[in-house]
Length: 503
View (cartoon, rainbow, N blue to C red):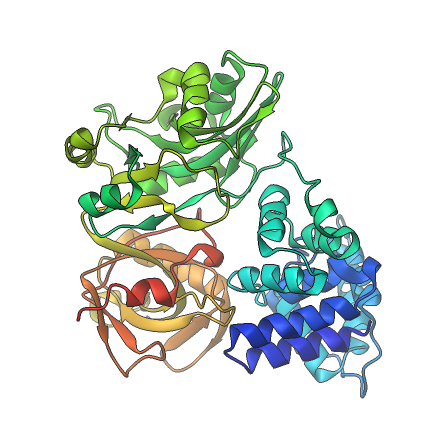
């Protein structure tokens, strides 16, 4: 297959807002691809090459200035081989070698292919919102149920592997994916509820748990080997020795636990979220000793050789109590005690509670109605699209943020408002540096960035507005914090925001 076929499909998808049309375009391309090409084709379309991050920055590519080819001649395999070579370059003289490989690759590409390659290599092409569309397209191309594809992806965490299995072996191949110790699965997510009473009424038989102001973790243990992962499936084992030691001492041979971790003050209250997240990238003994992490587990997905994903939550909680009772998150199964638990969680400095269907299986990677979060204030996770240079006291800092909601149909984020409220001096300094590192281009006072950073916004709701493309605007929005534990694929959708619209 020519690389130009992928580029053309990408251009066609960008030109339509129809989810059905996008699915059809991708399915057509997947059907036409050779089976050996499938991992690369899927990776390129999703902006997630199988090589991972290539290690080549925006400035390196911007300085190439290589004349484009007059016609398409690059194959998918040729691009994949070049990216393999780029990913493996390291050591003294690597910059020169990388430049040579890039000039050769870009020299064989047409203008459209060069633009696509630029965005692919720098990570700018990555569209987390395309993930759901891609899964539906794989199901369509392979003629298999969408649920089979989603489950295989949940267990593998890899779109290319899921597509290859579906299109080469159908439902039987997809059914071979299993929970594998040491390979993280995508976490189950919670939707928002209007109120505690509404959540309880919707779910019936329930479990109500603290919603902590911490960071999501998933731990795997096989014998003495322990791995710890974030909600984005990034491994942080080497940074969280106290969690590794704790899990290694649990009374079991093998286990997979889902939960949250956070650093606490001497009074037992949660430290700021950023302090907890700072531990995920630090091995400095001083910081580790000052910010010990406390785990709270709320689910058990595997125990001593038995996978529990498809069992009801009530049974998974029994397994959890058996193996990690001392680390169990505060909870109740009594609806009459739910209000008291919510008040207790808020009094201790946490965000609220999560109400869960006690009979539901673990639906990883999906934000369904089986888990409903209840918080006293409206908060949404949005993507930063741009920022404006500040004035007065904020001169020299990127201040006013342009915010976008995720397009559930795979398009780019949809702008829904701006805000400069809630930004501390420390956060201003940090975002000024961080946003310039992912800069796409700038105008007189606006710096446009790749849509990667997720920020948690508190708001009073949304209102109908013609000012922004989504037809709504945020009301009294203020920044609570950045969410480095989330990527753009986990931002709230425009549909979610529309449910907050004042009538």
